[in-house]
Amino acid sequence: MTIQQVSEILNAEVLTTADKLDTVVDSACGADLMSDVLAFSAGHALLLTGLINLQAIRTAEMMDMRAVVFVRGKKPTQDIIDLANDRDVILMTTKHNLYAACGLLYINGLH
Image (cartoon, rainbow, N blue to C red; front, side):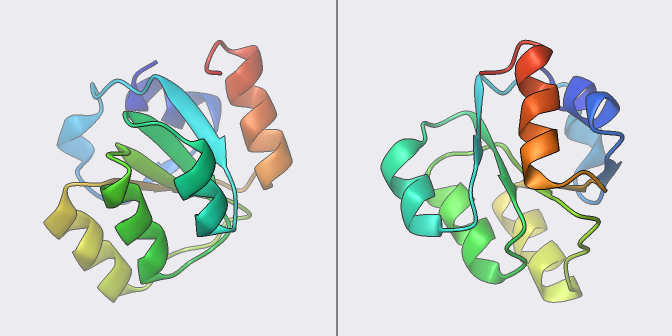
């Protein structure tokens, strides 16, 4: 699934690297505990989280994740956006909660 498709399904606002909407993600991981992300996710994935801090971006980078979606309408601060741009991580925000966002992606084929 492409980032463009993810943004459409979640009605998400793309906050960084909008020129990379054709980037493909193979799976998704929804978590607020970054230790769970490190333990249970794979590369080329999408991270969905309500955790708005630099650690979410660093974790995504370590796990070779392509994008981070902040749920519940949360918007990152400029330092988080800057780090994501530096690390080439796409950031989005959606008004859906974590459960609904993961469910919408799942029923649309992203597992």
